[in-house]
Amino acid sequence: MIYLDNAATTFPKPAQVSQAVRMSLQKYGANPGRSGHSMSIRAVEEVYKCRAEAAQFFHAQGPEQVIFTLNCTHAVNLVLKGLLKPGDHVVVSCLEHNAVMRPLQKLSEMGVAYTAAKVTPGDNDATLNGFRQALTAKTRLIVCMHASNVWGIRLPVERIASLGREYGVPILVDAAQSAGVLPIDLQDSGIDYLCVAGHKGLYGPMGTGMLIVKNGEELSTLVEGGTGTNSLSYLQPDSLPERFESGTPNMPGISGLRAGIAYVRSLTPEVIFRHENKLIIRLYDHLNGKKRVIIYMPRPDSRYFAPVLSFNVEGAMSEEIGQLLNKNGVAVRAGLHCAPAAHVFCGTEQTGAVRVCPSAFSTNEEMDRFAAILHKIIRK
Image 1 (cartoon, one colour):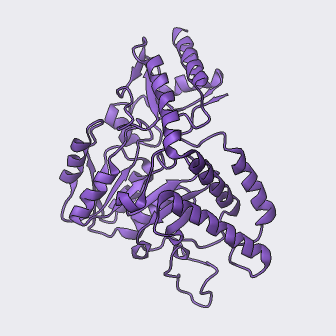
Image 2: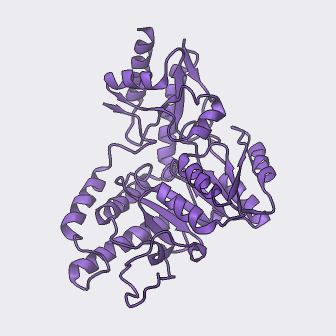
């Protein structure tokens, strides 16, 4: 199979990730922090090592700023529902995933308002101006994705964060599509809340994610319970990361995530990005101008786009093309990608789109074969 659905989850995983998960089940099988025996202590140490690895990778202030979550969506919900109150206003981009829009829709029933800022692909000045125009005196938070999971459009998150500081508004960045592919430095970027998927560009197992915060104490909790600390008190701990990590953690997932981050760090996001970007440009050049193929974005410029390419075939629904590709041994994601706002942006809300996303393991030959298979499908 040619696997090009890496925007949903990366596959295959590096060998060391699988090995780490197996080792965790064998060596760290006890509940971390809940017991005093040696296996439990080893598990605590393993969790801390992953936390420290992530803090170093993203240049966080310290390991305690790294909060493990189920996924990126969980991290987004922790911030939105832990920070916003009735009467607050939020600025989002016009491309946001339902991981952002559905929680905001729920919060709107409680009196939280939001405005979608216009994004202009390839023009960061215009995009920044769109966010500036959307701000109001009641704006409590800016929320934006780092890169669109449908069109690959990169948002200038560092400049948007600077705009937020100018107006005293913190920023949440949804890095589900960018973490591990685009460099992220929390010390320099000004990002207040970074929401990360562990199973995509960091090559960790599914069921892993992280929220990395500058000041998490101001967030209310969504879940309370046992943390292995202050057990005589019925009150949830105030200290990080325990405040947001009630219950037994995903120990094998955390071990696998640690190995995934180490793998990406060994290659560097810059090298991975260059590799994936070359593949996307190669595929773009195969498809651009071909009969019946509709491409919605210009030839990818690394300054403005992440390595994601979505297209359609004239006269066919995207799901139909996706099914035909699957029959020919190609895995892609077709449809609306849980991001209706992004599809409204390009007028594809009725047809959806066929999305291609390579990984560090993808090759030139796979891009060439994909293009040949697609052209064969179109001819038939």
